[in-house]
Image (cartoon, rainbow, N blue to C red; front, side, top):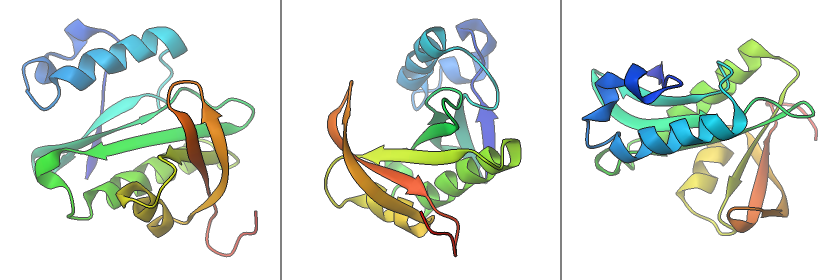
Length: 150
């Protein structure tokens, strides 16, 4: 599995612009960069596995107050194959390789679903319901390495 960085400007992302899987996400990601800044590795990525684009992932900006939020998704035809779990793991590993002290968070709809399962498989624990400015009430999760206590 390989994280392919989404570059800051549309014209730098030629390989994704005409791909129907990427078309919507690419513009949304670039617009997000304009809002929060472009600071690798705290950016968006497309995910390649076995030569195919299988999903996307992102940090929702650089760490703030020692915390960074991750987001990820698998393209429909690749769902239910463990790819989301591996994407999440890649984001955690990159976060900790970049800053071993960062607290990694994620947010989900306030219900048990595939995203909550992916997070549990990657040692995230549910911490609270928070009011997200864009999504309303959501469950917040925090990465807890095996053996740690939050």
